[in-house]
Length: 333
Figure (cartoon, rainbow, N blue to C red):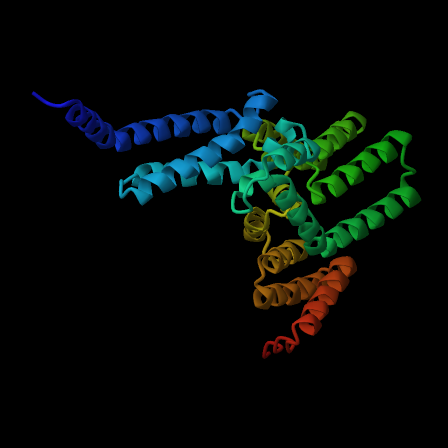
């Protein structure tokens, strides 16, 4: 007959044998909970949204414990990385859902998380990216302002704008500034006000659609784009306008794709070449940016567009000086 000590040892052995299985089951439960909450981030309560952070901590700890014990959890590890990527893309939505930076700072002060747990510092990373974006997009904002000034001056001289037009343009400019600053909810409110004053102005619906895109609301974005296409009347204008706003939002790849679509429709489009140059500059490909600024300046000169010509060549000169580069060789006749 087994002694009491032998019985206890047998129970302990069975418990140890079953522990990895139990830990994996608990890990999968955590991952399932996280998956549902991140997928439904716009619908869950602020409390449930905040709880995502400690749940991520627990999940990482469980994965580390299993790896230390020699247990294989490769699929769970991949799922965890996928969830982190999803949350990273939804950082603005998450921060808005929990109640803003102040709420997250307060909870972080109480928890004192490790710096490696980046999800506790979403407010800081967004603020840093916002500042970097504002610096990167200074030239784009300058172009937008310069073009808008030209349009407003012409409009004032020949058509005498109505108070409604002036109010609508004012809200549009505010929305553009908020888009650059990463204040997406505020930008959406501003562009919606602009639409109330200028309901037939197609560019506003492009801006509205881009804001919906960065807020991860693709269905509403497509509705806005459909209205914009109807009002703008041609695809080149639509792609040029959307490229501009994607660049203002810091979405270089999307801005470049739209500018390239516009180029496919009109290879001589100076503004499209300008936007491609800006996209390359935002991505850090300075050599290609300079090449396209040169092309944009030449196309603007050929089409008698002094605004784009001056801005393209000024930015090209700035990059050449900043990076101590030589100007592109002129093409042989």
